[in-house]
Length: 319
Image 1 (cartoon, rainbow, N blue to C red):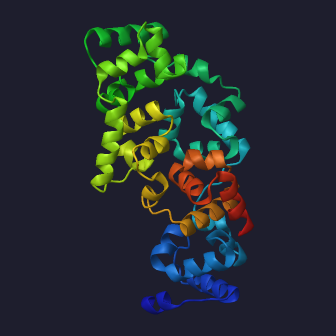
Image 2 (image 1 turned 90 degrees about the horizontal axis):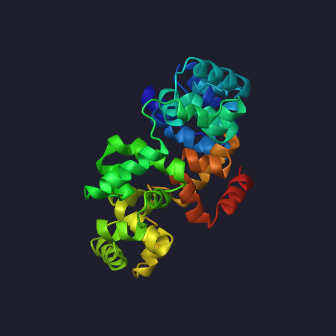
Image 3 (image 1 turned 180 degrees about the vertical axis):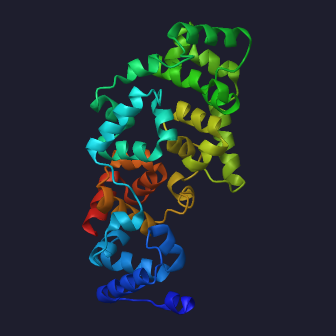
């Protein structure tokens, strides 16, 4: 009987609604990830005819929030929960909040745009909160540590430190926070950033171009997602020398737009458009929010449609 249920392929809106109700009566879960596994044809038809699974569920007269098992945080609930957690000293920075309370953090992004804005909206001074963290790196401590690393001949390439010395992640992030960027932190320690780059190494302009050409020759992808995972220092050097990674790739004689087309984690134009329609209809997400929550989707949207504004226009037009 199960295989027979799976073989059904409703086409009209009325047939889709009847099928949703039938699946519901049979006790089959209707939240998105479940229906994608158990009844893909129904999900596909529902999205084609109604624009999104959410709208199809609502058309069937069902409560989408109960179906999806997702808690919908109101702004009042978010404010109350943040104040309570702050009172308990449950988190000491945004990173801790997102790790310990991901659903609350996601609600903060949807309602306020960022975690910091959410905290400030309830009267929590984020800079004061950071200063209360144990083992907090002060400006003078950061400067002293940079000088010490320089004297000991250790690398001062931020990307390398983050990758190879995870215990110093907070040091790097705090340095950027205090001084604005890593270059200014080096200058505060009395060092010449260009001299540091030459001393560390390894990524003069010619080598960057050579490595890009070599990756291309080997058939390796050059899209940003992959570079950040596999060749972070090369990516950083390319941006430093040429302004953007795209310009670095083009300067190496590789057509960036053509080369990265297959490296967007499966984000085809059709899949990107559908995902944008669903997000916009569900949460009315802005470009900034989507960029924070799903950077790969945001990059795919810009890639396929030329700009975020055009991607959003197309998604809203075809809702």
